[in-house]
Image 1 (cartoon, helix red, strand yellow):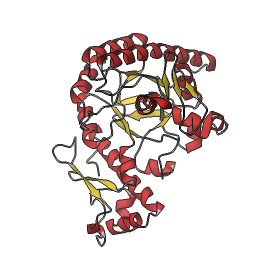
Image 2: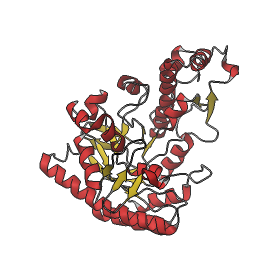
Image 3: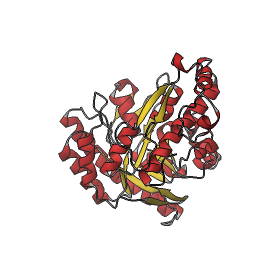
Image 4: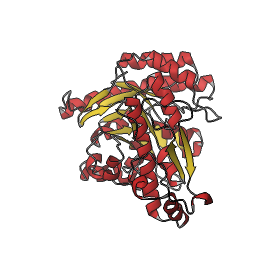
Length: 364
């Protein structure tokens, strides 16, 4: 497995967990908070950013790094997942065509046209360190013919993304050391032959790494472990693999054991805001095994007078200075400080997990 990626803003150690900063911010935290949690990179989303705050604003502010005050790596997602989560779930929000994706935001008469070329051009203009090809995302249980069409379109779009990427490099004069990496996304649902077909085509086009495409869970919420492992086998080990949308702690460990080096999800931060905190019950060294973590639900009445920290072994600001009782109080009165402290704790949990997978220490 790879242990690092060389990027324009330094070296990104692997494995890495990238929290979602979808609209240019990890909700409730500033860049110093995120750094304090031990996070080395974040992921933002071009589909959302092109709407708010908008491309002209981002450029006027000097790009995403200057806007967020973040000088570590940023990966930008392409907008392909939004085609799945919006359009495939409800056709009134837009349409998928061979040309690209047409979005119709709810409550708005305007259309948003996102082509492979536009997605790459915007990601590079925003100053991302890792850009992602636009893909046609599907759910694992979609019919074979739907998966086949998504693979055909994903391959065609990947070719156009690569062409747009090369043209942008030529026009800006970026050299090998400064250029962003570009990832292709492998679709194919739960069909091994389609996953192999897509992977082979993307390898032939040529990318710096690859992403696990499609929703990674089945209808029961279980990880699609067999197809995820199969896909990793189709990509040579010298290419990094990003498990897009994987953020459940146990799923991260499982995918890491399969050979995936990068992960992103909104789950840890979203859970924190909704009162579900992560606790590392096994704070030993090395990859965790067995029942190594649990959830603490801060709204529960049992925490009203509990003077203990969320986790005795955690070194985050929240656990060093505040009690479960205080967090319960903040949550009960809906004070914004709760969201900040809870989010910092869950992100530090994910960073400690990554440190253990890297072999950097005991996760404390």
